[in-house]
Length: 240
Image (tube, rainbow, N blue to C red; front, side, top):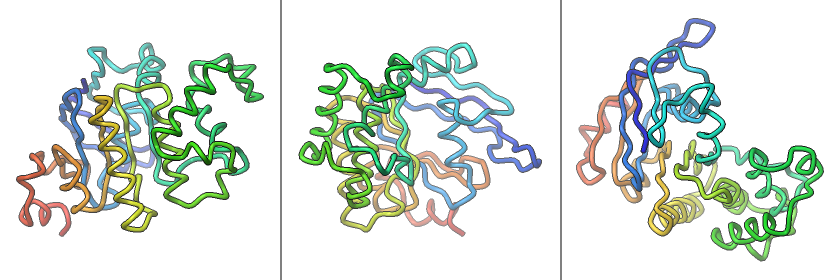
């Protein structure tokens, strides 16, 4: 599904963010990445779908190398969930979800949110999946943080991606909402077979919902273990 070989990223100011990452994610896995702020978690996820350029190494997704010739296909097959939701506040929930189809829609029509009936049905089904069908025509800035993140998930899954990349999706949520979001992602993972790679800070949530946990610190993978094998010794290696 996803294979990363010796991936490196150095920012223009000379700061190294990724220092030779090697990682393989199998189809249908739910893998969480733990690590302190500045460890390279966000840079890693953004490199996979082309939101960040890399300095070296290779990424293979769905049996194809990720480069400028394949990145549009990669983006069509991946969904991205952001920490700060990245919604348009004055748009309805359904129109925010429909923006997930912009890469595969008529650019002129989508500019004015003129989507087809079939596309709107897909958006409504995505909202139903995340339990927000009744909020389809509510403005996103009228909803709670947890509801806004569920809209973000609906937007990410409307195109039925093979891979979901979730960058700190519960960082700004209270524990109850965080568990709701992670349980929703787990259900999507199990019901649709969607592979999920999720950045987290919360060790307990990573252990509860993930198949594997990868520990990242200072741009390097420190451990890669089955979630049931994670203990205080592992965690101390990345949070010290």
